[in-house]
Length: 117
Image (cartoon, rainbow, N blue to C red; front, side, top):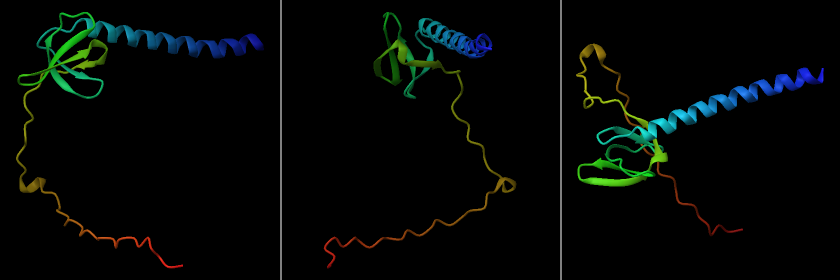
């Protein structure tokens, strides 16, 4: 009975370790394959374009025209697919959404900290 219990506990641990190792290997290959011009997102959610990838541990990212920052390669989360600028669709009367008036703000009275006892 004890060996069966050991097997039941060891198999999920083994499978999760394999999955984590595979994910780390994919992340490492992504970070090593970066080249200038790639659009990326950092772990903090910053989007930019790779400006220089010649360093071993760091990478330069252009976050705005003329603004280049240096990041650790480990901070790159993913490559972002090349997309055109966001397209804003014109709404027709069929797509009309019911407008709800903004709620009026109620101003609370200031607390009186010098309350008499």
